[in-house]
Amino acid sequence: MIILYVIVAAVVLILIIVIIQTVITSHRRIVTPFKQPVDENLETAEKLSKAIQYRTESFNNLARINRDEYRRFHEFLNTSFPLVHEQLERRELSDFSVLYRWEGTNTELEPALLMAHWDVVPVPEEEEAQWNEPPFSGAIKDGFIHGRGSLDDKISLISILQGVETLLAEGYRPGRTVYVAFGGDEEIGGLNGAANTVRYLEKEGIRLSWVLDEATVIIQGGLLGIERPIALIGISEKGQADIRVTASGDSGHASMPPKSTAAGVLAKAIWRIEKRPSRLTLTPLMKGFLESLAPCSKAVRLKTCSPRPHGPLPTVGLSPVIQYRIPSTGCVKPQGGKILQSRFSGVNIPAIPYPLHRWKAMGSD
Ligand SMILES: [Zn+2]
Image (cartoon, rainbow, N blue to C red):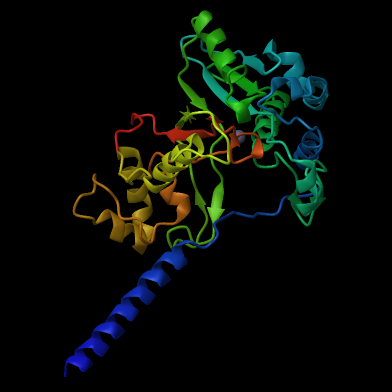
């Protein structure tokens, strides 16, 4: 009889594991940007394709940034959008920030700001061969525009300019003044780009009614079990803190090592950091996001029916796309592509970037 109970228990256990696995894997399917072929003859497609061909890569080491290429890119914009160039006031605030001003008819209204950035994440030479089309080809093929920046973020930049250009051609003037700010260092933090623009606006006493910056894409492919395309609108952004962990030890010789070394201490610290990710906690923004999706997703309905909707959130069944939006995330990141640059007596340490929620101080979990 006992053996029978054991067998039944084992079968039930296996069933539970299979069900949990199925739930997890069904929500971890790859979520891809929604693909809608473009009209290849569209003038804007052509302009985006050309924009991609400028290698406007940004590097943490500012000296590596090709500023001549940046200048060539701006000349390309000036000639591609002649009405914008003629009719909007254009101000180069730095090599990394350009601000346009489109005067509105009603000076009583606070101005609005549209933003985008022209810099892109570098493509290491050894990775270029992995691309279906060369990353800076801007190839238009089978209804798609290929290349670095086609999504992030030259598409926004070209779309904004094309929109303004079209409206100018129609003789349109906005009610409120519209500013358009482009940055050239967003991928490395924006300190000389967006931050510069903010300093300028502050200095001029310009208060904005609203700002529209790049956000995320329309995605498709089973996010939280939702098959239809979902447009994710970014209304908040994580901050980031880089934490440098340092350990030091006694000098010595490898033939007579001390019991514990700086490298060992550091390894333990890194291990502990990795083992203690932040708990998933529903903030009001995330709760609103999940509630909007709930009517379309059984998975979301299950999650938001948790007895403690503001408390820690169970992770089972949540896709990584969602999981990483909720908590503060941490990542141990070696410097210079090496895990550790160590000497026996001390260790130079990898930095640990910590994207932070604005409303949550680090370490509050
Ligand atoms: Zn971007």
